[in-house]
Amino acid sequence: MLPLPSRCSIGEDAFRLDGGTVIAAPPALDGVARWLRGELSPPTGLPLPAGPPGPDAITLALSDAEPAEGYRLRVEPDRVSIVGGDPAGVFYGAQTLRQLMPSMVYRRAALAGARWLVPCAEISDAPRFGWRGAMLDVARHFLPKADVLRFIDLLAVHKLNVLHLHLTDDQGWRLEIRRYPELTRVGAWRRESMVGSRQHGRFDGRPHGGYYTQDDVREIVAYAAERFVTVVPEIDIPGHSQAAIAAYPMLGNTAAPVEVSTSWGISSRVLNVADPTLDFYRHVLDEVLELFPGPFIGIGGDECPKDEWRASPHAQERIRALGLRDEDELQSWFVRQFDEYLTARGRRLYGWDEILEGGLAPGATVASWRGTVGALAAAHAGHDVVLCPDTSVYLDYRQSDHPDEPIPVGTVLGVDEVYAFEPVPAQLTGAQRDRVLGAQCNIWTEHLPSARAVDYAAFPRLCAFAETVWSAPGRDLAAFRHRLATHLGRLDALGVEYRPDAGPLPWQTRPDAQGWPKDRAAREAELAIMTARIARLSDGS
Image 1 (cartoon, one colour):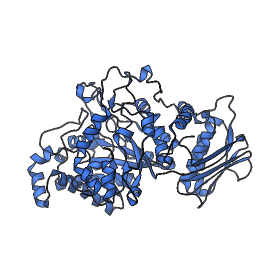
Image 2 (cartoon, rainbow, N blue to C red; image 1 turned 90 degrees about the vertical axis):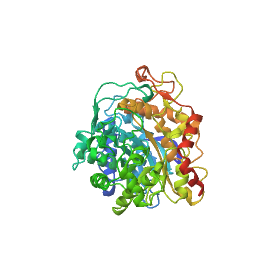
Image 3 (cartoon, rainbow, N blue to C red; image 1 turned 30 degrees about the vertical axis):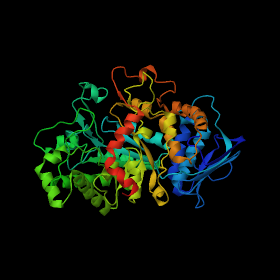
Image 4 (cartoon, rainbow, N blue to C red; image 1 turned 120 degrees about the vertical axis):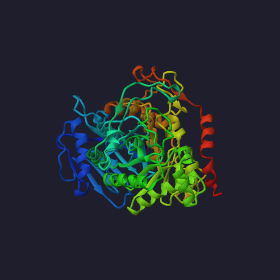
């Protein structure tokens, strides 16, 4: 099974699903029962109606004896019971039940000749972390709603419970904001896209775009909630905002016109710090909060060049008026405006670790992506943190040194390297360790223009990541590899176009597009320079 349960014993006898099998559940678990029936009925051809607990029943129940998100699964020759500490725990127990069945159970229609036997087993399990996430970038390349819903299903299969949806960037704005329609009329598409890494300066000459209506988002959020996945939206400010500036030029620092960026990399065009711009984004977030009910709201805060602020009389006047030291403190002030906005509305700000530079907003939670320095600094300062270091969990990074690896960027990050990731830095002790909410893997899509490309980048590395955030430390790579071989059959049944262990298939290569690979030592040297300003905070100095 995957992720590996805490305690598991499997016997020789089996429970058989047949025409008499029912699903028994109290009203509080109607949603889980409906989901389970919807997953099991199509491939088995069995109706699995509601019925009483007892013989021939799959019984779902709640118990205070089980921890949050934890469950106890018992399969006997004549019955199955799943008892959870909450509905999420029952849901994860049901996911484990599916894994005990033949991989054909992951198909969407019945195949002839299948015998639906479930080996007798007793499994007790609960996750290590409460934040088990994946970030999906739909700003660089838009993924239609159906692909996002499919991705949510794949997260749920792996017992991940957070989808961080990166909705806006220099290259596109993907969320309908009714007060500001130009954000999607202008900002949701670009004239062309780069082919391969930006260093090569090649473009495809094709427009690219798309966005989610507010009803699309409501559907995505509701669909995710039914699978116990919380959607965390990200509206990137004050950098990574060129698409918004193209739609509403008054948000920028200069009068020069700008289009939605067609290049990868970091744009120098950033938001100005005027009061009308702050109000604009408060109005945007008013609509975002109505659409996304979860506690965390992402504001980015990363990779904000300060050149325009240095040249802007208004920005310099703001620095003087506030008594700030420099542009880094100005960015911190900017971020704090939205920390206060979100806190007043019962939400929590979530931002990349650059928000530590110049001082951290009081209520902020940090996504530590530039190594673990941000995690150490945030935890030492008493802030919650989510680990997502690029050299461990950026699933758009190249998977090998294989010459056919499509558009190879970043450091080599294979399945084994992801599996070796430890979310809690060894330098944290005592209460500081409790500040680690969990971890997420990140999937940036500059070089992933389709769901097929996302499949290749994400899987099976996401399977390895799922175990690092669910299971206890001290994991066994050889045992995982053995279980992964079986799990690939489930991915096949789900139609996931994962990367084969031997290398990409011919149609998964990209001979038309060059990448920009880096070695680990060079990347770590870059990260040391990038995080120098916050490194001193990690030891309290």
